[in-house]
Image 1 (tube, rainbow, N blue to C red):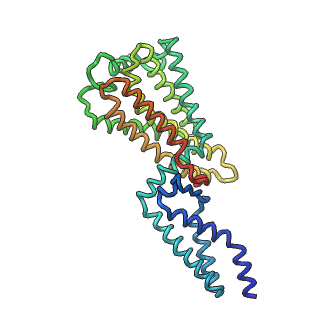
Image 2: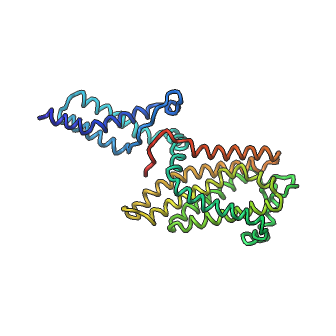
Image 3: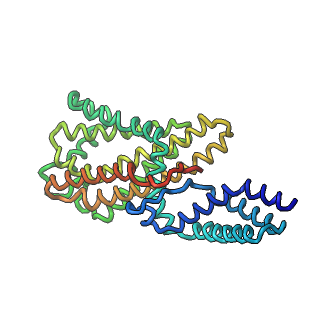
Length: 338
């Protein structure tokens, strides 16, 4: 009778044990070996580690108490030990988790949420591009978005003949000071878009559209008056990170709104918690993108140099951002769940 129960036990749970063992073997590989083109290793499906670990522990305790085959008990014991090490080392391997987040999780998460990211991109870039074009035909449209003093300050900061750093009202502002200012400014906008999702998405949509119109008006006006090299040369580099960080923060806000508007079979509270975890993961990456944008804006964009160098650098940075979100994190098939 005991052998029959053991056979049924093995037959019922072997698939789980094997998948867990394969997952552990893959996790033990080095970061670079996982991504080696020479020895292409296909990533196993992601698992809920705490849940699977509890199941394996239960199976081990059951097999041990029923005195099943010692080989089976030993196998389950080894899985428990390896699972315990992986579970608790993953909580303390801070640097490794950060590397994995930026090399795998963040770009994969953006692709996973492509629908919401696409909506956020449309809400920002459509009015942004539309008003740039519109101002070329209707120049006075700029005054519907900015007052006269704002327009004058904008023109002063990017005057082509000035022999000072562009993008600043006062030449005495140091690079380090401006770096701090840009961080505060960029992240402030990002979190307004993110938090705006809690108003059933109205806030996120408003800030996406508003910033698209406002920034588009600035781009359009500077293009119309001929400040092309001084202005576009300034923004083309850090814009790859700053503008796309705005889009992603808006997408994170819309993810919160989705939980309130379409909770599905969950309660709104449960859906908000689940979607909130995904939205916060996106915001981790947004914050870093905004800091990179602030660094480039303070130490690179404002520097006076041949504009062609800035255009080439800008093209490279936009390409890098695009390839990062398109290519990285494709070694793992599973989606990122809350």
